[in-house]
Amino acid sequence: MKGGESKAEATSTDQRLKTRGRKPGKKTKKDPNQPKRPPSAFFVFLEDFRKEFNLANPNNKSVATVGKAAGARWKSMTEEDKAPYVAKAESRKTEYLKTMQQYNMKLANGTSRGEEDDSDKSKSEVDEAGSEEEEEDDD
DNA sequence: CGCATGATTGTTTTG
DNA sequence: CAAAACAATCATGCG
Image (tube, rainbow, N blue to C red; front, side, top):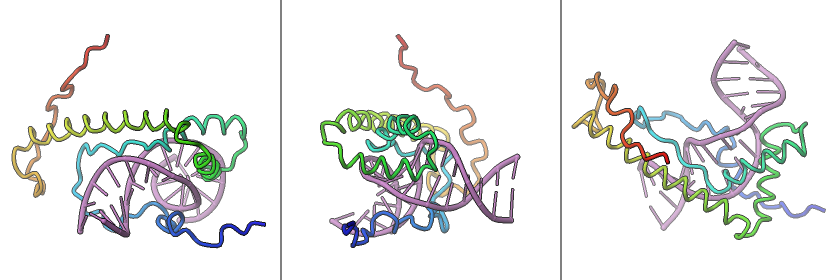
């Protein structure tokens, strides 16, 4: 009985079904420090889940195995269960925002103008433009 | 020897 | 507003 998956949820394997490497051209400008996207609650949960999964299945095949298991488990979780993960994800996002500001700051500082159309003229660019911009007290 | 792929969902990004 | 893309992971396979 499996009847359930009759419909192809064109949402999973369809989008990146050809490999997540969807960069037919990647025309986006090459940002030297473009911060990557913060992990979603699901990824945060995955971090923990992976560890357990590895212990429970030391012979797992590959990420796909954990991914599926995690996905199924994730859907099984309630908001309360996801709450701690979501909360963490939110923190990540906040930090990401901060990182973005520094990234923008640097950019604004390094190249005063030419934010968009910078071919290669700004050779100097941001060499050591403030490695440590803001150091929060570390207790 | 090294990169690409596979699979999950969520957030970020861009048009 | 909507769709696209990419975020981590890690073993495995191909050139």
